[in-house]
Image (cartoon, rainbow, N blue to C red):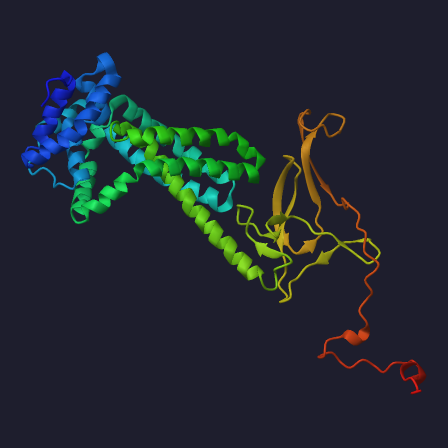
Length: 418
């Protein structure tokens, strides 16, 4: 071993070598040569704080780091576990906080994936509010790892068991294939950043309120590009990279599901619904909505041949199914818009919300009292074309009863031959 390495690195690598002593010497030297430059670089970053304890805080104990090197290289676990140091470490730090940090990470990964999937399916901000339930657990877990490091977590029995399972799984797979997947890690972090940015832009295009969320997604994109490549050197960054990766995977699966659903609806709409309305559960809450093309339709207005609006009309499709959508009304006590049912009666009142001043005038957001009003007037007028003649009675379908004979004189329908 080169004597040019800093003392902390030499001590750390010596313990790593001891933990790998059961492997062939040539392979141990190859492993150490791979990690030695990274440890030297980390020592340079730490500066005067480059002590063994600082390296342990960043990477975990040399023994746990050696176990990770074994797993990544496809080597079997160490036959005899050095339990003395593990017991001392557990007695010193306790395993309650470490276990909470580990399972908090697992819980956060599931939450990030689930709510990312839901937000991508409906392309709405509301499902992301579910992350508020995950945030406290996630924050406590991250705080513990930042303060204590990953060493106590790496010594947990469940984590050791997972490492053993991972090692046995890798030993049954092609090492070249795993090496190829590991080589794709830089591309994965870039893909995560691209997905986060694109997802944020789609949310902004769908909902103007999402512009407040876009900066957070941009920060997450920059953070994952910065933290992803540094994970092998600082295991604490797993608490950032893994949840973000879970969110990206969930949102990608949700986006694929939404695309397949849209293609299926359009394929179905290629028949009788191609140029009209088709029922679609698209409001994000499971309430029925109508769509014309790719836009939601909240109300329908009908006019007679004279351009007069019609009321109390009921819509059905060609199979007699009612085209029902959600009906909303004003909540008088709170001034909020609320669901009151769904039916196929149109037009329905328009619900307008805002703020009303003391004189009852609508002032946008300058007043102090909630305002909600149901308006039944038609917000526009329709000019019905007059050039299209009404179809004659003789154009009825062949299955209709025969039309009565014309009452016109025969001379009007038969012309003499000249």
